[in-house]
Image (cartoon, rainbow, N blue to C red; front, top):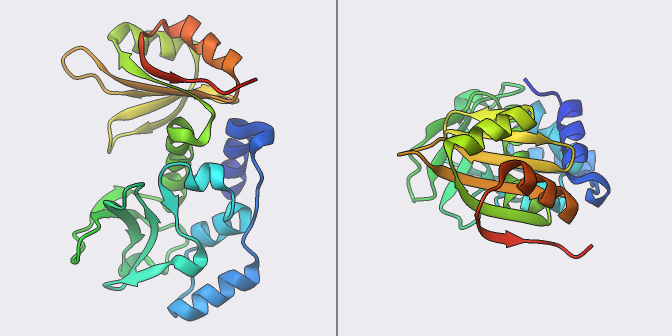
Length: 220
C-alpha cells in the first residue's frame, strides 16, 4: 500500500522542479464531504491535501476530479475521468467507509457497469502518476514499437517501478524518466517513454535504440 509520503516522493522524483504541489484546503474538503453526505476515503482526501491543484500529475491526460466536482452516481463515488470522457473511475458504495478502498472502472454510460481496476486507491493513484507522466506530464515524449530485446534492455537499465496486470504493462525508470512497456503480442508491443530533459530522452534512446514513431522534445 503506497503511503502519501511515497506518492509525494514519486511525484517529486518524476517532475523535479517543474512540480508545484498545490493542496486542497481542508475546509474545502470538509465542504465537499458535507455536500456529498459522506466522509471521503483517507487515501483520496490525503491526496487532495497533497496536490489537488497540481496539473502535471492530475490533468496532463486523464483527469482527477476536484472535491467540488465529485459525483455520486448510483451511490458510487466518481473521482477520475478518462481523457475523452469514455471511462470513469470510482469507489463503490460498499467500500466508501474504507480508508484505502478498491477502485472500479466503468464506461461512462447512463447505467454504469463496474469492473475492478485496482485493489487499492493509493495504488491506483501511483499508477496514474506514471501513466500521466508518459502521456504529457513530462515534456519529452517518445512513442514506438518495442521488441523482446527492448524489454531486456529496459530491465537491465532501470528498476521496475510498477507492474500493471490490468492493462498488461510495466513501468521502468528513475528520477525524471519513465519507460512504459506493454506486454508483447506476436513479438512486439508498444513503448512510451518520457523524461524531464531532452538529454535524458537521448540517453534513453542510447540504451533502447528504438525506432520511434513519434518524438516530442522540449526546448532546453
